[in-house]
Length: 110
Image (cartoon, rainbow, N blue to C red; front, top):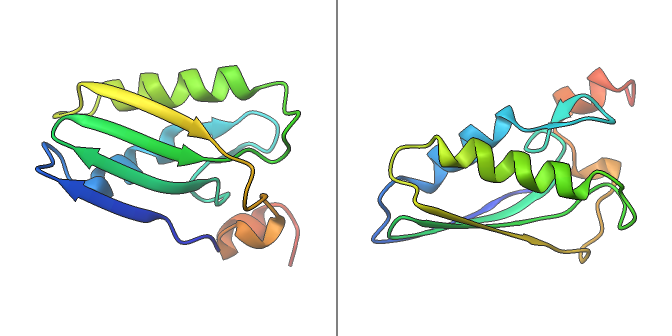
């Protein structure tokens, strides 16, 4: 499973709270949340500003705009969060190994 890097500088809310809130964002194709899928690489909270570094299952994912909007909407409801930036990255690329054991079981990997 991908380990998410958490960074806080004068954080108005803990980075772990932001990460937990992201569990509400569901990948529409796979039907699981982006945290369990291992798509969230980093969460940085500086004051009331949140920066998310994440990936998608494929660079050509047609739902990138929808997922990014869901992330921003979801985090807009977290107390202490004023601004959200989402940085989509492709390195390292997402693989099924990035998923939690629960997500792998849910999708039939074992």
